[in-house]
Structure formats: C-alpha cells, structure tokens
Image (cartoon, rainbow, N blue to C red; front, side, top):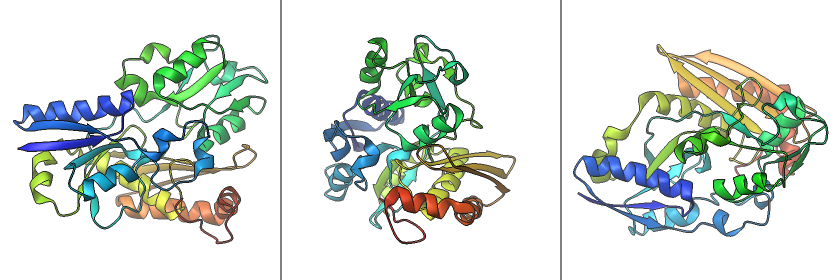
Length: 310
C-alpha cells in the first residue's frame, strides 16, 4: 500500500517520521514523507506558554490530513491536543521512549549541584515551576529551537544548564549531553512525553489496518490516563501540569502535578486503579479540589473554575 506521512520539519520530527516509515516499509508499504511547517515552528521568538495557540504544532498537519494530501500524521503525543476534532483519531500509539526530563550542563551533573542564580534554559512552564520548587534560587530563561540549536546555546555558555526531554536526546543519538535523568519524583513529565501518536482520519479502515501492528498496549493505556487527566484540567502541552502513568500486571499507577509557575505551590497526587480513564479523572478531580483550579485560573487568566483547552 502507498502511504503518505505528514510530519513537522524539525530534525526530531523527521527522525520520528522516518522511524515509522522504516517499519511500514518492512511490512511492504510504499512510503512518502511530506514536511509541513506549523504555526509553532514559525513563531520562534516567543516562549511557547505565551503563544497560547491551540494545536500550534498540529493544525496545519491536520488540515493536510483532512484534505487527503496525507494519509497519516506522526506527532509527538504531548503536542497533540486532548480534544481532537471528530474527523480525526489517534489510531496508533507505538512503544514509548523514556518519558523523563534530562538535565544537560557542561559544569553541573545534577539539579542539586546548581548554584543560586544559575541560568537554566527552558520554555516549558511545567519544567520551570518544578525546577523553581526544587532550586528556588535559579533564574529561568526562555529556550526555543530544535535540539541541536538548544545544545549549541548551552555549549556557547549562554546557559549554565538546560532541560530537555530524554526521549528526544535518545532518538537523535545525543545521550552524551545528558548529565542527569531527572527522577519522576522531582520533575513530573508532560502528559504523553516520550510517546508518539499516529493520527489518521476517523474511521479510515484502510490506513488503520495497515499501521495497526505498530500499536503498543502499555503505551496506549499509560498515555490515555495521562491525557484524560490533562483534558479534565483543561491543559495543553505548555501549562504547569505533569502526568506520568505506569501500567503493570493490569494495574495503572498515575503520578500528577499542578504547580504555580514560580514554584511557590506544587500540588501532587497519585492514584492507582485498573481503568485508565477513571484513574486520570480521579487524579484531576483531587488536584482541582486541592487548589489546582485556582492555580490554573491564574495561568490562563480565566474566570471559570476549570480553564478551557488553550
């Protein structure tokens, strides 16, 4: 079967699309990759949390999918909004890479070693909030660009340290840059971090059957719990919400965090269960009751108790 894959143009996005393409070719499919530039790729001078555009890394790709210019899209799952339009579906969640965040630094080997006033680069409110809770003296500066660009800025000593997703560094063969894999207990990852989402047109049986062998049940269950929590909290990928689920022997364990961007308040909940959606809902409800609603209201500048999806 001939399949056309849509992908962002960054080095990491191309690696992800090519890795899926290679596995599909092994199954006899003819694959073409279309590079599509998204709103998030075009806005590089502003911190992501300030952009606030829903689906800023997916909108143009979904348009191509809807117009049948592509047959499927390969996304970093954490970039994919939790409220997909009815005409689309996440048909496949492949096996997941390490979901943890990684500290990259020339001088320091762990968060604990960072001195007061250390310059740390990240454009993620989630990372910033948890970092400030651990290391209240550090100064956080915006950091945009692809992985290589960010690492070059570190090497040029523009920052004392930067925080990146371990999954991206592993996929690009840059594990040499990792000084510390930050424990989940210290920095809860973004919902879906380390996972890919293969998006198709809803009900496209032809494409769905062709790619079904890539599905990983554990990754699906874990990320479903995380994304249910995120949706319940009204969050996107650029809000101070962390979620990390593990699935083992039919049991799901979910760790979740909501924090003020300055790190002054950090709410953490953990829930166990057998149903991913119920676990995600329960953790979200507990966080909202404990003050998460007020924190997220402040982040979004909304008056409603539960902020809307950005």
